[in-house]
Image 1 (cartoon, rainbow, N blue to C red):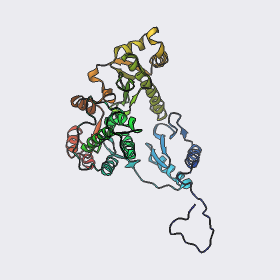
Image 2: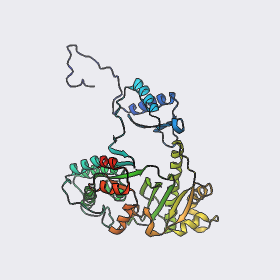
Image 3: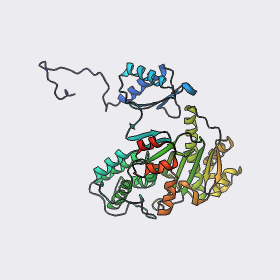
Length: 406
C-alpha cells in the first residue's frame, strides 16, 4: 500500500487507517451491499425477490421505492416528506451527496415534463463517437445492411483486437436505451474472440447510424394504460454457421417499451414452429418476471398480458392439450407456455408478419420495414430542433414545458 500523493510526514513507517472500503477489493461491494440492505431493512423496507436491488415500503400515497446500484441510489415516492426522511436517515449512516431531482444517472439522461419522461444517452453516444473518431462521419440510415450475414471467416484478422472489443463493449451499454441497434450489436458481439476487418466495418456502420441521431431515446408517456402488450418472433435457422435461430421479443406497458431482447438460441430448431415456440417460452419467462416486479411496485396486473405471435402453428401448439411425436423434444417449453395460458398470465393472439413489431430484433430489415419497426418502439429525440414544434401540435397546453425540453 502506497501513501497518497502529497502526503508528507517526518515519522517513518506510518500506516493508513482505512475509513472507507476501497474499489477493487474482492469483498468490498458485497460488504457494502449487505450494510446498505441492513440499514434499509431496519427502516421497514422490503427487498424485492424479483430484483434484489429494489427496496419498497408502504402503499398508496405512502409508498416509497429505492433502487440501488452499488453506491448510486434512486428514490421515488408520491410523498416528498418520505423521501426527505429517507435521505436524512441514510446521510446519518453513510454521509451521502444529494444530487436533487433525477437528471443524469449511470450515463442515462432523464428529462421530465407534463407529458412524461424521456430517457436518452446523448452524452455517452457522443463520447463513443469522439473516441472512435466518428464525430464528423457521414450518417447512415440503418445500423446494418439488409440481408448481410456476418461470419467468422469474413475478411482478415485485426492486428489489434482490443480496439474492437472495447468498441463493442461500449456500444453494448448504449442498447440500454437504444433498442433499434440491439440486433446489430448482438451480431457483432459474437466475433470478439477473433474480429476481422469486415466485422470492424460493420461496427463502424453502427457508429454512423448513431451519428445520425445521438440523442434518440425512449419516451414514457404520463397516465398511460397499464396493459402488457408483448410481441414475440423468431428467424428460423438464420445463423449460417450454426443454423441456430434468432429469437426476439419486446414488451410494452401501455405504449412504453420496457423490455426487449435479441438472442441466438442455444439449440437448433427443426422447424419454424419449434423456433417460434422456443421464443414464446423465453418471452413468457420475461413476462412472468415483469409481473412480479410490477407487483412489488404496487401495480399488480388486472388483465392477462396479450402476446402476439405471427406463427399460427406455434399458437395452435399452445392451445392443443395433446402431445404428439413432433413435440416431445420441446415438451418442457410446451408445458411452460400452456401453464401460463391456463393461469391467466398471458393470452396468445395471432398477428400478421407485416405487423410484427419484434421482427427488427431477429434480422436486418430493408429501409421501409426498418422505419416501421423504428416508429413502433416509442423512440424520440429531444435534441432535434423540430421536436418542439411537433410536440406543440401533439400536446396542446404544455408550451412552456416543450420549450424547456428543446
